[in-house]
Image (cartoon, rainbow, N blue to C red; front, side, top):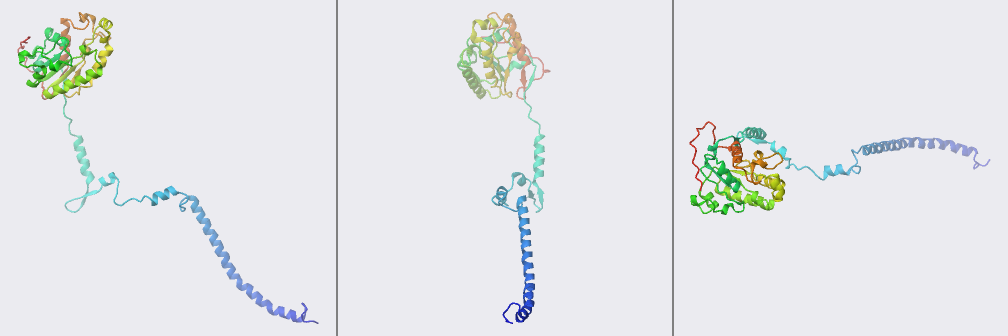
Length: 338
């Protein structure tokens, strides 16, 4: 038999000798394969966990760039702190210990909040003694007040004149000669008064409200310059009757009210006060009652007492201008009319 034939005894003997060697090679390769498989499984598990973490937004910086920017691009400086934190930092005491500075600040704040507010002027009802140091400036209506209902203890005759306006009062020479002053401005410079009453506007109704209010303020500022301690009373422009308004539309209540509002804001309620005298001279329709006047604009002699009484009921008193209702009533002063 040919020994090269596949099933010859020689070939079968050789195959039996080589079979154990091949078995040994296969067995020796099994551990290496096991390690490769185990490493592969571990790698897949690691990648799975990383993917889960990235999906929660806690590991991957590419999933949440805003948070990453806030954490890395804007670090908090150790030398910077919000004002509220710095105000609460302890202050060093002389002994080297630290005490909270905020406790001192809180104590000071409480002390300041408990301080009483300064007392301001108080409105009271007075009698004619209140006018003893008063000066009245105005037009013909103010002249009527003194002609027919003079504040009994007023020693200073006012300086009114027919057609007097806020534009001309300081340069007026009317009624000043007996004091020895050339103009009202000179009088204000040369004498000191406790109260000054102003009544202007009825002759200025044809002017623009802005111009009227601007000039009024200029006069007030100049009076305050010469009379720093005086109380100043801005009296409202008095209304006219309905018939007078119809005859002369420039005297319309709407026009008068507009100008009253413009001068009312000039009062600071500290040393300058606005008095709405129309409250006592009103027919209920914001007009002067027809039976209070003969010409529709000026009061009858008997009606000036209403204005006089209103002033007595709206007087302001402070430390510089004291008033006591229990003070003895002096003898009535004789008013010297020019």
